[in-house]
Image 1 (tube, rainbow, N blue to C red):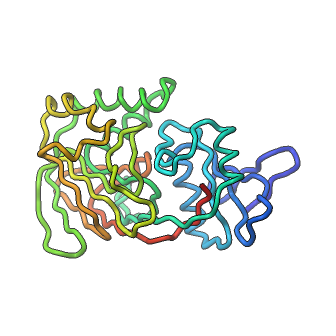
Image 2: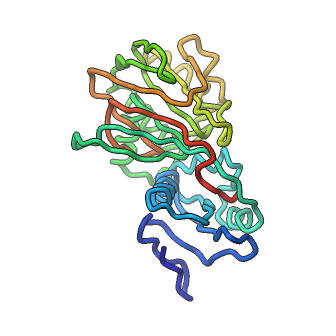
Length: 274
């Protein structure tokens, strides 16, 4: 990693994010604050894990469209306050998800995710949001994208295998695999998810109609979506997702590819300051 110069942050060559001066007083883990949204945090985490960088802890300074992971970590969306929290926080290892998938060019791909992987509706939603202006801000940009995607998207038939047990097939609107609790600019999709419990929280939003989506949007923001009869949740350590249809994958707010995919938890893999 490149050290910052005297005039400010330096670009991190392996992550495409930012590095700030090493924080004294917490050896042997120098602090590497990443400033951005969930996509930036994902790039930083993948850079650290793919390059096997040891002795480094990651601090989050939110400044992006979604910045949902910081909600679970209870880090302020105010940059000065987040910096203060980073300077006074403690190092705690959190779980990381690993996904093997087919990328958009049809090649095998693999990435880590810190917050949420979403397939189906969420993949199409992120494809829309990331291809349009985000000047409305995170929450409104995602809400606008939700409404537009809703009238274009068709629910998908997906086969799910949990923890290498017997699989099952269903038609679903969206399948979220959550390490953190929030995604989509504040949607509280997995209130039971914990970043350090060794499990991912699988949230299956079944064959809901457009009307059902519109009349239950507020449940997503209140954290009560699991109360809907067509929504099921499971704690999982691994799962496989396949479909004969084209089903896109959103990984920490970035469109990365399509099914088939295999997802697994890597417990306490990433040291984070919060």
